[in-house]
Image (cartoon, rainbow, N blue to C red; front, side):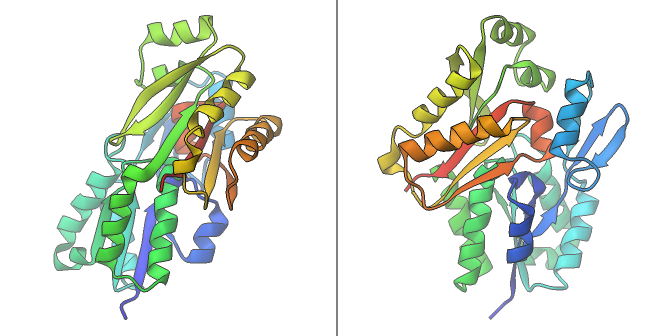
Length: 285
């Protein structure tokens, strides 16, 4: 039986202990600020980037590794594995998938042993797909079977987030200055979703953020009979323990999941969504 490796981008936002427990290989992104370029997870954390942005920092550009770094990453891991399934952040918001594919072209025949999957998601939306890839690997499936099933899974994953306002969306070119000011002035809280790999506005919640957040959860879980109850992620950036606890309590009140996992967003994801961002991410049957 071939030894199959599973790899992914750090922006899947799964807990570090999961990577270690299941032998997941990780590619780390970079964040460039006015003070330098930092490697996500090693040189900068979600807390660091939130503190930087809240204290007036204006520049926080996020970048996937260049093809050369992907090439080194795959070359190194092909010494341990016969084949690799790599699950990438959606190609509609990052060069990760394209850079990985470019690396495989340069690798020639060896590159055919790596199967890159465009998740069409980010954060723990793609995290669900990574977990499924691990399960399939442990069931003895081939690399091609894993890649095919994980790719088909993308349409059943729900990746949504509610943000405090539209300020950071505006900073990162995801919305206009007018929309950003409108949200701040009238206490409007955008709810974002991944649709066909793109980040789009799903709806807007009005009023106090703590109340809007609970309405967001109720809206996402209203079709709970169609939701797979095995696992749900609550992923956050720059939120208090109280806020996260309230969201978890609301989830538990609405729907009984076998497992609810609370995760902190990576620095890359946090720099794009800003503080006060919360998401519930799950899979439909």
